[in-house]
Length: 104
Image 1 (cartoon, rainbow, N blue to C red):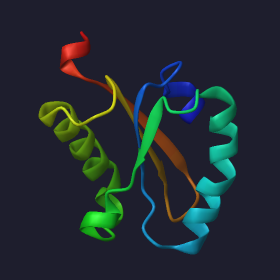
Image 2: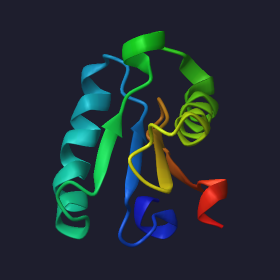
Image 3: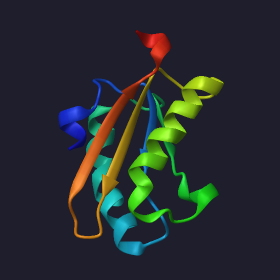
């Protein structure tokens, strides 16, 4: 999912739905080395909304998109793109790519 929607190369925020569940951390632990091969070091930062909000459950994707848009608006995003990456409790995965309106 990340390869299909992710900007090349990503220069911005990678928003993950980590929430304290060990299995979810293992999924991202396996995915990140693959991403590191494709994305330059320092080109992105990892954002975990659950660190501030707690586990938001099924709305994690929406919360991730809101966090990315807010970072664009307040100008603390590190780039012009954001990639929101999700994994469901059943194991389905998805990703959404956003661009800052100022990038257009």
